[in-house]
Image (cartoon, rainbow, N blue to C red; front, side, top):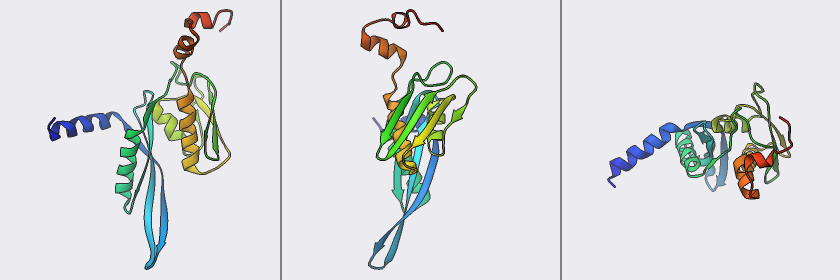
Length: 177
């Protein structure tokens, strides 16, 4: 495949996804001549239809760090089951390091109730009604990775029914609502 076709396909795929910078952090390394400054960018990409990814980029300049973060996020895409009402199918708790995030489904009209770094993850995944609470740490990287872990644990009703060897209607026999 010629190089220009590959570049066109990559640009077309990236145009489908929107990106959001969660935070940019300046770090320094002490060397013989003094401090060497570097930047870390945490970026979330998503298409708003259930596909989302998280990436981290490091560089000495902001635009390069963000671009590296976007490239990393595109490599780490995953899908999230979203219901018709724009929420998640069930309650889940994600873990990463000392970070824990509790994610609960919410009724129509609630909106995204989530703190700082987790909000862009839900918005770019296409989740419009959700409740979340971060427990444990306040480190943005650990919180967002814990939220991503929780979203990856989610299963749709169809997947749960298939795993149990029954239909969706059989699963909800005797239930009201």
